[in-house]
Length: 319
Image (tube, rainbow, N blue to C red; front, top):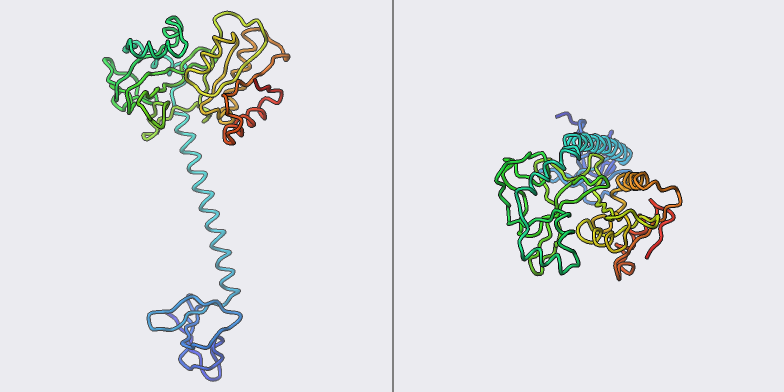
């Protein structure tokens, strides 16, 4: 370690020669001074060394060091951000295409049934037997076993393909898109007082997400049994029961988003709208109506999500 010792002729800039044992570390540029009275304007106190010397840094040098360190930190942060984005994109690129997801999900549904108790619960919600069967609802037990293994590339399937990653009993809900293809599976947890009534089956811990290839959250799209009489596309909160019931009751296509977070699925919503309009031969006169939950407008978080949907669809109306 290289040192510069201050003398009576070359006095310490911290104490101005009050002491004669001051020195400067030429590697760190810190000045070691034992003066208890020193309070130099151009120096910053940095603590003490092991021998009781006070450590002082020349302020311009310290400012330059902080600036350099900040630039280095920002570069490192940007590199880490780019690395995370690459890893995330690689993960998304490895996800099953929607058509293959649909095939795996239907293979799972073929191995399961719906209990009488769960059917009764669904009928009490307003569903008919025909709607229940068409929707593909199934009963599952915690960590549901499968008789025939399926691809573990579907999020929510255990690594060995022999069971599902559902941490509760409940009703299994396949979520369809505008083409009638299932994008992922969700569970309605019927446990009393549960804080999460609905949750997606996910294998995110091993890098298999249930998201779309775009990185967006999946949406639910339900079409009425008969061609709509009015040129209207509706929106509701939720991916599970609400959009299907709304579509059946109102007789129009309904798009649902989890928690009303439509902003997390902008591209998916735009694609769904384009497909629906093409299917029915609708023009630009199509109306868009949000069927808001009772009391949702006074909930600031939900109201904000609805506002974001309005940014995606400027002529959105609220019913």
